[in-house]
Length: 131
Image (tube, rainbow, N blue to C red):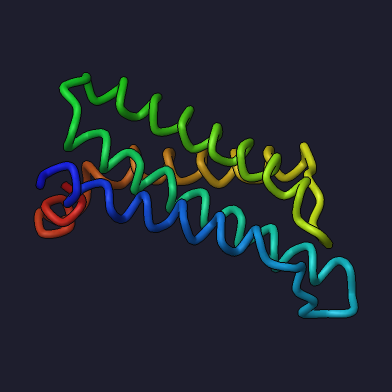
């Protein structure tokens, strides 16, 4: 039951990422720069959240040291980003781009920095929720 409790948010988010990358490309603006900024910002946010949920899952279900869980969460999240780009090669109107892997990685690294910087200083209630 412990595994289900800690892994369902991560698996749900991975499923949502897969689902949205399976859909046809959306057009929110006729201006390329606006379109690019909106969707790449969403990538940064979703992969940052993936890292956080992955780290929480690993931290609570493995016996590894905390730094190993952090490193593994980064690697697994990047690997999922690569998998998602490969998946998009087979979706009509979508394309795979190395640039997107770097953007996903940026979201992961930013989330890791924020987590390492601010979680130790967070209120006890927030720390307990993060566990």
